Image (cartoon, rainbow, N blue to C red; front, side, top):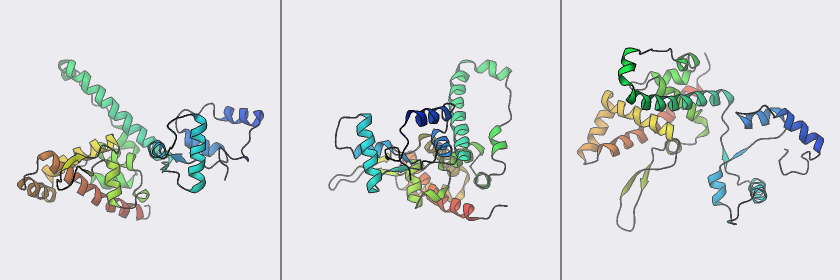
Length: 259
């Protein structure tokens, strides 16, 4: 394996300039292009976890390089999953659409009257992109899950095989309860702040719909409400439980042979 810090890596000006020329047109998917256009094994490191492992408060490029090389040498490099190119494309489309939706909402508040007169419904490109995606199609079979929610879940999660348990997936979605206990005092502090914010929004919206349209989840939410839990806590509990069940459903779909 050839590492950035390895003495085997080419350091001559000719080889460096040749590599820069090959990577000159790379804008998006740098990690994928670097892996495809070179013989290096590309591994992405989680910056937050790596920062906590730093002993020196001073931050320089040199100290970052030594830290990453030491972590990789002892096998403690906190890696981040590198999504395949098709998942990255779908992720970019879903995230970009969310930005457009936010912009459209702001403009709609100002020119609502004009939009009523000139409303144009454009065809959704997401539906065309995910026509043959079995995971998206299975998600859309769930009552309360629409095209946007299914595409967002598929784009952000990618594959369930990269998670060991449903609890880990729930934490990635940001729907794990945060405990705020001290001594004999036990209290909840809402959901954790970590996680994917776009995915968390989509899951919460889906669970709001499940509480209204699904008999099972309506009864589950009713039991929590009768116990005195506020509606926000109820939806968070539904989201946590639903994502854990979703993990096993995604595993089942992924294990099915392609049609």
